[in-house]
Image (cartoon, rainbow, N blue to C red; front, side):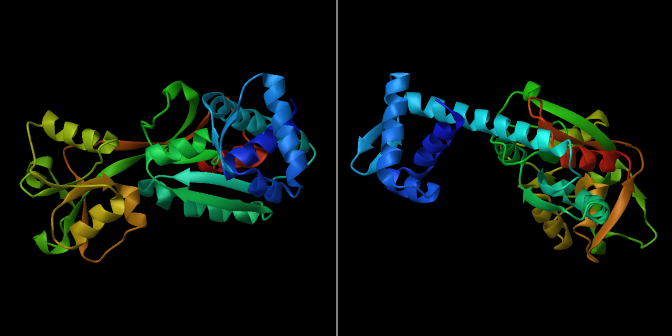
Length: 297
């Protein structure tokens, strides 16, 4: 079996029909059917259950699909690496970012595109679990995220480049502040307000970090809402629902005249940020230069 046959197999697996797969591959149906039969004979297993025109992967077929994706990705990455040896920085860079890190991207991308105008970007926003799945499928090359990175996959799959940490700040509805000159508050002052927290059933890192700090000071604020995104949290603060503690950089994306941002006087704690990629993946020259620009702008 060769790489060409693996591509045929994946096309059939993705389309669920030989007819559609043949059209996608720009070839006739009979030769593609023969290729599938040859693969099954060579491997000595049935790869698809036939249900009329529709094909469903068998257990053996699903295993081959997973391995084929990885093999072809590594093959394509090797070709790219060899080609890059004699070329400049170019192509498409696919990156992901959690919502609370999106504001970190624009200045780096702006500077990067000025230096490397032949590079275009494909940017995906999502939570750790969605981005982790896209990274594993090699749909993304890098993720800019809060740490620790939580996903369905084991942490040893990843390499991490730590970036400068991001201080936490308190966000309050402007109408709740006694004075425009108030720029700091203590955790004790904040704990009397109803609280909004950034948390889902699977992503709890930031919530745990913030409320661990309250616990260290013997405080337990009343949480009135768990929010699935920074955008929802900021919107509720602006509407006068409650207060929140988020990384300072988040407000670069969600500035609002209805929100007062204050430093936390008696708790200097930070949100850790980093770039994550697959440990076994060769990073393109474009990705390596992009990471360097984050570290050395």
